Structure formats: C-alpha cells, structure tokens
Image 1: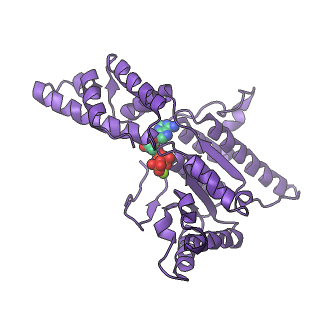
Image 2 (image 1 turned 90 degrees about the horizontal axis):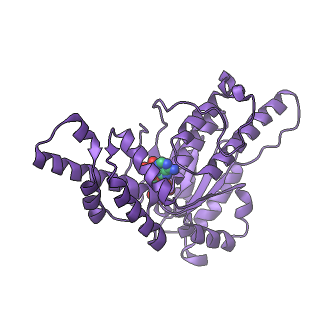
Image 3 (image 1 turned 30 degrees about the vertical axis):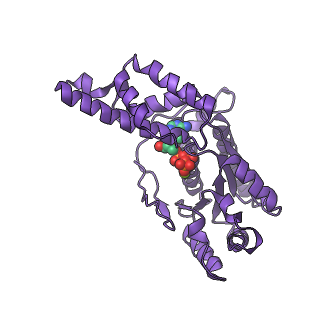
Length: 323
Ligand SMILES: Nc1ncnc2c1ncn2[C@@H]1O[C@H](COP(=O)(O)OP(=O)(O)OP(=O)(O)O)[C@@H](O)[C@H]1O
Ligand SMILES: [Mg+2]
C-alpha cells in the first residue's frame, strides 16, 4: 500500500511516500500505442523503470491518453540517455506539468507514478511527492509568502511539488500575496530545474483562466495533461476493481442499480463530482451496509462475507456524497 500522511487540514502538507507494494503482472505492450511486433525488449532488466510504471498504470482504469504520454516521456528520457552515451547533444528540458481535471480523476495517483518513474530513471534524486495548496504557500505579510514558498520548494527538491487548485493563487489579483507565490515558484523552477518538478493542478476551466492571466506561465510547463471525467463503464470498472482489492465481489443484481445511478450522475454532471473518490466512498458505504445486513441475518458464510448485494448499493447510494 502507498504510505501516506493524509492530514488535509488547512496549511498542512501531505507528504506521500513511495509505493513499495508488489503490483499486478506486466503487460506485454505499452498502453496507448499500437501493439508492435517483438516487444520483448520490455522484459529486459534495463527497462525495469518502464515495467514498474506499466504495472502501476495497469491498475488504473481508462486514462489512455495519459498512459500514452507517460510512455512517450519514458521513451524520450531513455533515448536521451542513449544519445548522451554516444556523445550526442542532449538538451535539458524541464518536466514541469499542468494537470487539468475534476476531483477524483486520478491526478494524485498519476503524479505518484511519475515521481517514481523519474526517480527510477535518475531524473529525480528522491522521487517523493509533496502535495500542497494555497495556504501552504501564501503567507500573511509581505515577504512571508516568498519565504513559505521557498521553504516548500526546498522540501520538494529531488521530488515533485504538486499544487492542487493552483488557480486559487491568482484569486486576489495584483495585490494578493498569491502573486508573490507564483513569482517565487517561477524563480524556483529556474534555479532548481534539474532536480525538481512542479505540477500545478486544478479544475479545467479555472486552470485555463489562471494560465491565460499569467502569460509567462504556460510555456514553462511543457506538459499539459487533461484528466477527463470517467464514463459510466469506467466508473463501474473502478468500483469492481476497488472491491476486488478488498476481496469483495458484486452480486449480478447490484450492477443495474449502480449503472443507473452512474448514468444519472454523468448526465447531470453535479458540480465537482468526485469521480474515483466518489466510487471509493460508495464502496465503503456498501461494505458497511453489507455488514449490518449480515449481522441482522447472522450470516457469516465465506461467500456472503465477500458479496455485495443490490440492497447494499441502494442504501449506500442514499447516504454517499457526490463530491
Ligand atoms: N483510473 C482509475 N482507476 C482506478 N482507480 C482510480 C482511477 N482514478 C482514480 N482512482 C481512484 O480514485 C481515488 C481518487 O484518485 P486521486 O486521489 O488520484 O484523484 P485526484 O484527481 O487527485 O482527486 P482530488 O481532486 O480528490 O485530489 C483514489 O482512490 C484512486 O485510487
Ligand atoms: Mg489529488
């Protein structure tokens, strides 16, 4: 399991440590690319970083475009190394990124995978991920913000600094200290660009606006990655997978209930619908509903303990929050 310190209080930084769990089996071809002949190169030990990344990506439903981009980044970093070894010119390119996506669309999960890949490929020395938000950067008086932001960049050196809802840095306009944070970040990107990756994340519309208001910014981020909302089919797959991870399975009659609910949600698009996070919460509610049901039935059969039923989903859907 990913070890993480999840203290989501204001001003609190989430330090997420590296993943150390064994992952599912390696795929035989990169995702997002046509299946080419003779890809046994993937199995060779020198491509261990790629294999590790692929294993983690395999655990994610959908996100085909992102998987393709990561494969490109891997190929490009690997080829740069080959060029370097043959004395060819290798231009240092920053790896800063903008992630645009609604809550629960996999941004943090993908950032962790990238951090580990960059560490495995020796692009980053530590490969840790620091998740921060406005309150972690912006201070209360002149000079305070620059100091706070510099401290954060220092902590993130050798890893990734991930700023969620980054557009909120531009909230107060010219007079707001958020601008000082942006300027300090830009300076940090220039000073430390060899061993530090900055990811700015947030809702798509707000991020587009934020970037358009800061004309110097977009070009400093070579990678702009979109995280789409999940489709009904993907939401069902994520639910199945999360259930399987916890050694639960769905009874057949449960499917129409969740499919209906997911269709309604994806049609209505409630503001800030939390996608994968919603599924995780829903599953937790279903598991509790199942526990109450089985306790009432005094049914502790192995099969029953593992099966989530229609009525568990109905109760869970009444109680779970969409955001
Ligand atoms: N494609 C996917 N396949 C399987 N599980 C997923 C996928 N995307 C997200 N999840 C799961 O959904 C939950 C939320 O994902 P994550 O925290 O990466 O999203 P996020 O975009 O960072 O969300 P937030 O806006 O809440 O920070 C996690 O439990 C994650 O494992
Ligand atoms: Mg996140």
